[in-house]
Figure 1 (spheres, rainbow, N blue to C red):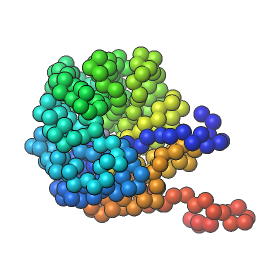
Figure 2 (cartoon, rainbow, N blue to C red; figure 1 turned 135 degrees about the vertical axis):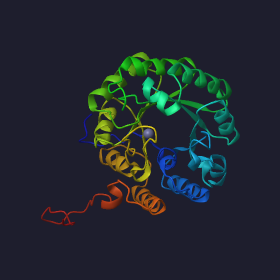
Figure 3 (cartoon, rainbow, N blue to C red; figure 1 turned 90 degrees about the horizontal axis):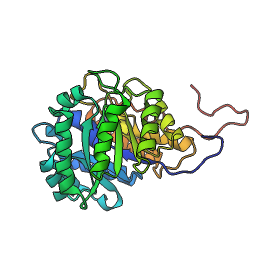
Length: 315
Ligand code: ZN
């Protein structure tokens, strides 16, 4: 890509913080506060959210309020609301809450799938088929591949292992695909290899990239995705996130930092960065610990310079 002139191409930023982020927080966040944060994100210009999860309330008590939370969101009609579902029961609950999109997930790594879902990959794909049969025609279907770029137990994940799950999603009629870097193991070469393979074998299946910043290269991987033509990225407000079943997994790439990078690179996101930073600061207060987001602390870059060319800000 040539970044010297803005392309103004639209890039979709999908907020996953109230799902991927909140699910690892132990103290229960009041349902009304969750809904208020979703509303604030929509007010800031976010139009796509994976807002919650219809997993078993026993497995993830933090998200046991999924249905009620969505019913409290005031600006719901302005956004596309997705929710994670693990099985037929979750699919029924998600449809009952009138979500726009359901998200299924299967790991590309057999060991992680066993640890995360207590199932074989075949078994998980059978559950995905049940979900698809319930949801098809009633909501959009997104297939997520966890550990698409590496596994904390198995190390490298071959392209063929991810492709096996992706092929299954395509056959079942899924129209959106998320490549999840669950434990932050993606690198520019692994991203390029898998995205190119999907563009070759499933040219009609739009790719969404979901990076964690565990090793500090999340936004570098976004740049690789952009160069490959990917225009959908998932991120968490303030950089919330992790995976309770993956050792050492830390937060997603941070939504404000992603929006900053995209807008400064000449893309259009439709998101108000200052408003988004205000939401991040609110989330930080709710969580009660410092979040890893950087633009929320530094603020957007100053665009005014003094006459001698030195930036107004010092330090
Ligand atoms: Zn994640």
